[in-house]
Amino acid sequence: MNHALRVMLLVAVTVLAAGAVQAQGSRQAAVVEDLAGKVAGVEVFDFLEPGKTIALPAGARLVLGYMQSCMRETITGAGSVTIGESGSRVTGARLQQEQLKCAAANQLAQGQAGKSAAMVFRGQPGSGRKKAEIPQPSAVLMYTAPVFAVAQPGQLTIERLDVAETVQVFQVSGKLFDYGKTGKKLDAGGYYRVELNGRTAVFHISLDAGEGSGPLLLRLVRF
Image 1 (cartoon, rainbow, N blue to C red):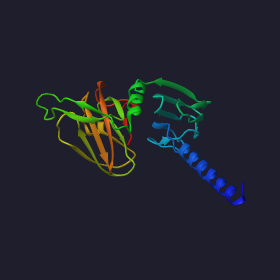
Image 2: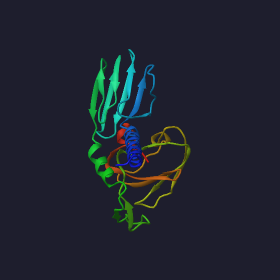
Image 3: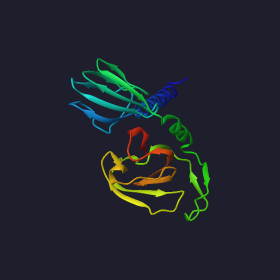
């Protein structure tokens, strides 16, 4: 192998390795649901990557939601917390874990995300939509008040897909938009499309969804 070819291969391998590291580093495993005390480096509604370490002072309280495992953790007291893929490694502090019931539904939805498959829905009598094709949802929510991850301020719209309803429009900013704070709720069993700054997602409210607000992981839509 000549020198020039060897250099080209080395450059290619380096670029691929750098891309892999960047992709790995961009994974977001957990979201900060609640925070009490002076904790450096994190804020409420931050999305955290595996490997991040958080130092908790005495009297601190940190609530994390893990998106892959649907595990909700409450960590209190002085200690160290290292973010993992599906749960935290905690030293010193007290760890309480709660397994939420969203995992199976959301894994099913995520497995369909990005596919062209659609469901054929026969609307309710008088709904104005006798038959419509609805994309597979990317999230199945267990409460009727969704929370939307917001990357940039803009005009957020929510459109009902299975029943003809007026499109809802909101001006939003911040990291998350909590629909529950509007005083409204969506319908259990409904299919909806949300759009913000050209990004869209389809989500489904479970037929047995709870009323209003609940744990963030059971209401979160990312798009």
